[in-house]
Image (cartoon, rainbow, N blue to C red; front, top):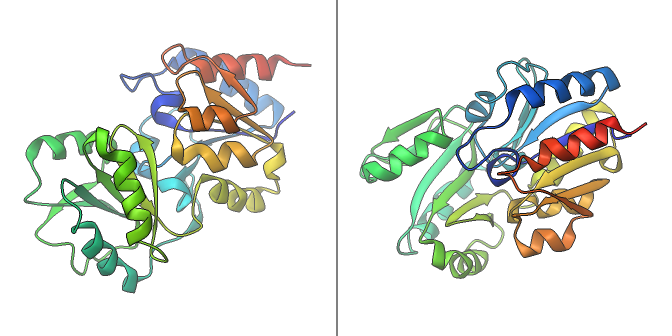
Length: 264
């Protein structure tokens, strides 16, 4: 039996309308507690946004911002931020690419320029419960965890490839699809975050099960003991996963967990 179960959120645990079967999960959560299994959310999203889904389950641990910020309701296990000297060079290179909308994501808040169009800000607030509008990204008084980029969906692959060239040694682009790209710290990903958490909890990656659907889940699914891809996952994720479950719309994570937790 696994000692830790981790899941991505968007396109994985959540339905497309950002809901999940809370009664079903409550039953499974009770089984996890009885069996001594730790419940973990591993997401590229902001910690403050993730907690809004699990207020009734305060033992949840969050591997947020693609592994850069790891904490529960009471304790910070790890925090990894960009060096101050890397932030402006990254922004300079990002602003050289047309058609990008940029959020700078810190420990305390995410930041958008006041000149950003209102529709994008409205969408961003669905994923960043703490979001401040600023005149400039210069000298933000925060520890910067990642950069969140929105681009035309059809250009995502080409822009990721361009960023890989531009940002060598500064940051690494990872995409969950649909025009969303995160610039994360070199060597930082969900697998690294789970490994860090595992050292605190004395749990090896081999003793973890994880669920995912997008490019930022690849390392996690490849390195845990059981990597489970959603039926709606990208081809790259399906290729590295150990097995699959039903789609996020069908609550595939909960269904797989039900069978996993019912095994003798």
